[in-house]
Amino acid sequence: MTKRLPTALLVLKDGTVIEGMGLGATGSAVGEVCFNTAMTGYQEILTDPSYVGQIITFTFPHIGNVGANDEDIETSNLAAASGVRGAVLRADITNPSNYRAALHFDEWLKRRGIIAIAGIDTRALTARIREEGMVDAAIAHDPTGKFDKDALLKEAQGFPGLEGLDLAKDVTCGQSYSWDETRWAWNEGYGRLENPRHHVVALDYGVKRNIMRCLASTGVKVTVVPATTSADDVLSLKPDGIFLSNGPGDPAATGAYAVPQIQKLVESGKPVFGICLGHQMLSLALGAKTVKMRQGHHGANHPVKDFTTGKVEITSMNHGFTVDRDSLPASVEETHVSLFDGTNCGIRLKDRPVFSVQYHPEASPGPQDSHYLFDRFVRMISEAKG
Image (cartoon, rainbow, N blue to C red; front, side, top):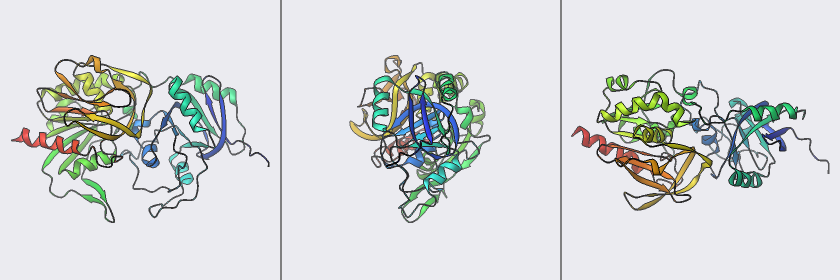
């Protein structure tokens, strides 16, 4: 049997070259290689702005088998290029077999400009990341199979890494807008909020669509504003509550301009809710520190304990930085913790209606274990309004 000529390469910065079959866009890209353990939701993962600068290794072997559609895109900034740098797959993409499929996954990757490589021993690559940490690499796809490996190695070695990078500016909205779309319902699709009870201003560091749908589904009208919006401008919109979104990059880098504004928003007394990057920057604003993780948390099977309820949630996570729990000041209470490694997953301010979580409660691996957080936020708003 004749071996197929490799049409894609993954070149790690230590010189390791992994051969496979190319899919999606052609060309090359560089990024940090991580692994994601989710069994479903590959389209949402590949359009999550929090993955800017990363090459995603899917541990689940069958990626692309349900095709793609326009409803499962998570990025709200459609004008921005796809943030993810590439995808690493175990098996070839099969023809779609789902009633919601509108496009073959390979064609969808092409249209999004995402390079993918298939036929990889993803278990071995994942084990390597677990043991040695996330690694920088170049991914390349050329149907002719001709590659300049030395040039790709230089690209991988020249990648600066994610520490110190403010990537929120690459995915945030260009101007403010309103959001009223609610969660998807079986045989109905997405709905619209008709009679909002509250008004929330969301600072967009890379916000996901379903987060805003969850807010709207609790009766909240959402005004989304760019990441660099000042606290004075946010408060001038007369919000009942303030939301700090997820996003990519180093929280300390984005925090250089965001943290002083978050501090002013906390001081305003308005209820504040943060998710992921928003959680990390809120922690920085309250006096804690953040650190880079060796392998990060990426997947939809992460158990988290909520100390305020005593319950364990199965959560969706995507972060390479974490809040140093030992740096939390006395005014801050740790509310959630990862049952995988004990890292911090949630906080609240003891004397104000301010809280945040590290994971993504809008996703549904539980399937609805974490939706209560949106209700908690709305209760805070109602109480603050009297």
